Image (cartoon, rainbow, N blue to C red; front, side):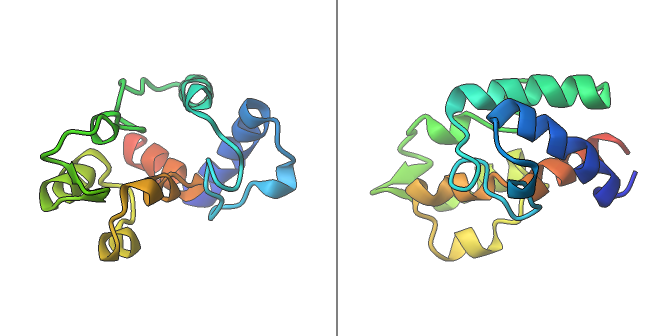
Length: 127
């Protein structure tokens, strides 16, 4: 399955889960900043993706919570530490964190959760 084929199936799931217009959902759309997703919405998105793609998404696999729990080994002074960045790479190998790494402010971590991240994740699970 190509990333475009995956996107065509992900898009209606996000429209339904987030109550947004179809035209609002692009590959570069950020789930929180652009589409208004809240923490509870992430559970709904995971449920819908599991059903749509007939796969099991383990807790913390697509949207890892460990990085958000404020562990001082991972986050210090509002910035992800080297250990935090390593954990992010390990937990989210399908995410492009190259831009985030240059200024790893914790408050900007939500920008990593994009429609493209979801499509790459689904592609990685479909292999």
